[in-house]
Length: 154
Image (cartoon, rainbow, N blue to C red; front, top):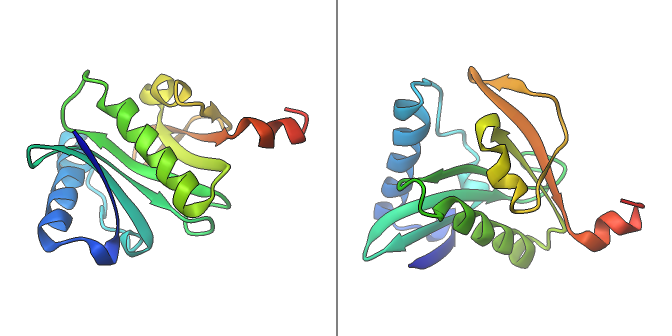
């Protein structure tokens, strides 16, 4: 399995098509949630995905601080094969990219509530009450490097 990290400008048209197709399949069709999936933020994102033998398996995007929140953020997390550890693996790759490319010591995300434990296993903690986003229950979560939390007495 290969992890790929690319900025928008480096994506081939085939890669862009595959990642948008996967996002629409999961977030619009599978979740029966009509919304504008292309949000004009992809151009500012790092696109991270897992593939094997040319097959697209999992995806997320990483945003630099200030694009979606006051912190580097992760979003659009998906897997196309469930219950195979791909969610954890793509999150690890996203965290690595956020740290190595954007120097993130704190990472923000808005998680669908049902997936809370997946994110907690990767060091995220809930920082908000549940809220609806496009009709789906979500929570805000934050992941802080240990040294950063210790400096604030956490």
